[in-house]
Length: 130
Image (tube, rainbow, N blue to C red; front, side, top):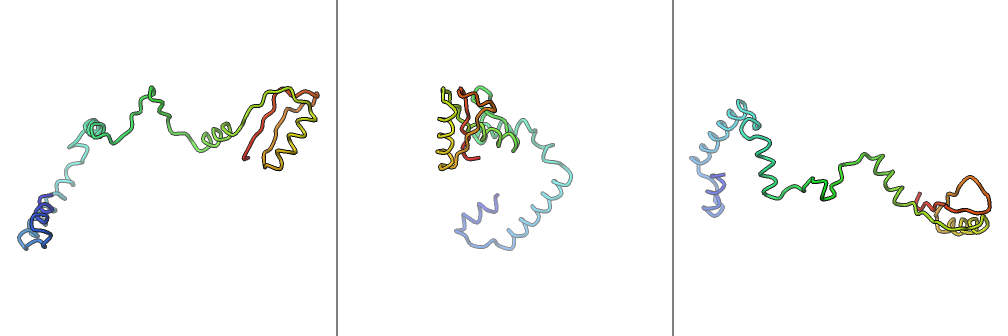
């Protein structure tokens, strides 16, 4: 870091031979230090967390702030399907539902309705994009 600051002070001119020798010596010492001591021994993970939080580099994982944990791919697909399903509550007859179904075929929507065709459908599901 000091050598980089010296380069800026000299307006971008190349380092001298003495500065190159100092940099090589610093690299050797740093390499030896890294072989002997792990970074976790120098800084605790709690200290790193506090510093990251102080710098504002992470989002809060507080449940009060509506943080959602990571979901698996299957859960994401399931959630997307749930978002696409719209519940329609009405008292349509089977004929009206079939007319609605043929209309939805043209708009590439699929109607899924109950197995029982009793003439009055209280609930049926319009599932789009599937």
